[in-house]
Image (cartoon, rainbow, N blue to C red; front, side, top):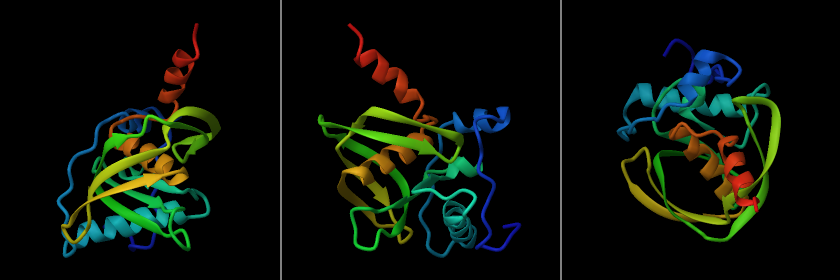
Length: 172
């Protein structure tokens, strides 16, 4: 609440030890409440951060700005005009067996991107809206990768962790 709701926040980076330790922690449940001014302000600032030219991305999770709550913003490339949407308490309830190969980067991992083979082609997610609605949705393609990446952040997982899994799966 220290700044205007349109002011971006500092993105935590893995090359800062304190930031890195926080990024490895699990986030907590957030009570949906469209009347909660603090929550609304935080969500607006999180959106301002992902849309800021110095941290432009296709998704962001609350831990990336130092808040260990289950909140993510995702750009929906599977919808007309590619809107950004906010999700509270998102959980992946099922993963397709079919995988996709994608190049990933991360706002919290500067100047690096990697190709992963371990992201599911489609996922089914449960989440809450600001209006306290609980929803389930199936998402596929690149948008599913964004969801998997951001939900990983809520569990203290970075996309680099999947590289070990990919290497293991290509062994003898």
